[in-house]
Amino acid sequence: MRHIEKYDPLSLALARDWEDIAYQVVETSAAVKQVEQESPDDPALGLMHLHHQTLLSYATALAFYLHLQSTPTNNNTSTSSGNLGPTPAEAKRLRTEVIARLLTLKQSLATLEDLGFVAGEDDDFDESDEDIFTDEEEGDDDGEGGSEDWWSSSVAEFGGALAARQN
Image (cartoon, rainbow, N blue to C red):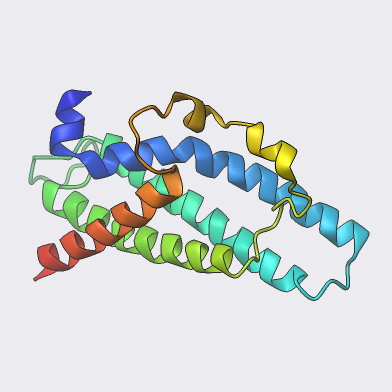
């Protein structure tokens, strides 16, 4: 684990994000269906669908990236049918393109969330809800901010690293 933290922290962060994204997809799907049934003429429904579709696209791209990371590369230059894995150069190119797409989708999700178009967001928040901790908050004793703060800084750092890598 320390090796991955040192040499591939981005992949580790994305792998850790998978559980949260999968949960959000399920919750968002249920919330969109509920709003469709209760108030199909809700003006925000279109943007809720947009958020849901963006979340699905992010989850799909994330799953593909994790698949690419776990797929062995083909070091042979022969093109026989037994060698199905990508070459190291192809794998690197694919990962770079998928990471760029993940960055774009994550920024889009953050924008939609900032604008309040999150399906399944609880509008009935009250003071009693402040005492409820998520699994991350309960075990977070290192003094760092929440996962959204971490993601925002990670996305910004990654964007800079990606731009430097492409130059």
